[in-house]
Length: 363
Image 1 (tube, helix red, strand yellow):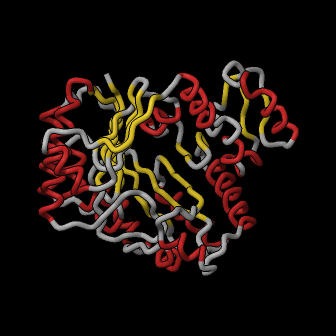
Image 2 (cartoon, helix red, strand yellow):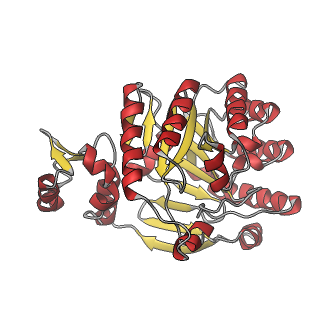
Image 3 (cartoon, helix red, strand yellow):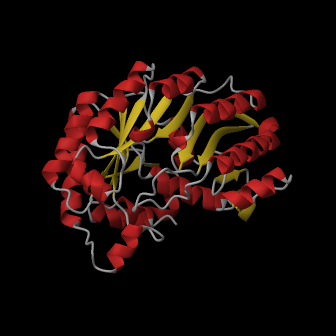
């Protein structure tokens, strides 16, 4: 049985210039058809699904209306055995949070919210193309608490053009005043097919790697001094509040992805659904699978991926699993990027700054 379920809801009321995930704006009729298709795809897998974790990503899942959520959540409860669910996360944009919606989500079994605040500096939010301001984000956080959510995560972005070290520090400190159970701090990346990537190519933006390194080190220092464990390079949590769903990915567990563009890895097969909501709807409702790419996943590839992801986590990589790469790891140890304990390889503080480069040795 597959124990980890991802559902991609592609609709966004606003397209942010840095986001490379598959998303679109759509009229209500298209959303309704999508929900029908999504529930049909769910039904096809219902006999092989008994999820422990569920994650609604996007897009902006919280942009769905109250009746649309009632249809989606009711349909999932009808089609799936949800008795084993331990963690059910939804990504929410602060601009789309309302108390009645939050109450419906909580009453339907969703028990964790990842809220994309991104910054508490209104000027930075404007650069990022966000539709909320800092005060709205704080209001939304309190509404989620009022609705009964006891596991909240705040997402932040550093390395944004025009974002100073002081601005970043204030964002971290304002987040801490709200006492979320989890914080994610991501460095801005310039992904293809985004407006920021085009601006970078035109020379209108220029990353400041030195400042980004300072912001990253400040993040670790401030959050760890306030009781948050850096259990993965970009993720911090209070003890016991790590994101179970993400850990399943990093540990190489089987997972199913539903919806357009969603990836799945089950057994020795990996596939992706087509990145087009209209075709996804038509194909799925027509009784066919909407897969546009698939590949075999060998044990060797799984080992490489577990090593690459594992090295980014607090647990690191066991010495036994690191055997094929020991020579490379020893070289990185001489550079001060990794260290060896009695039974594991771990990133050093400097290695965390260059975690992507370290991970390249495994793949």
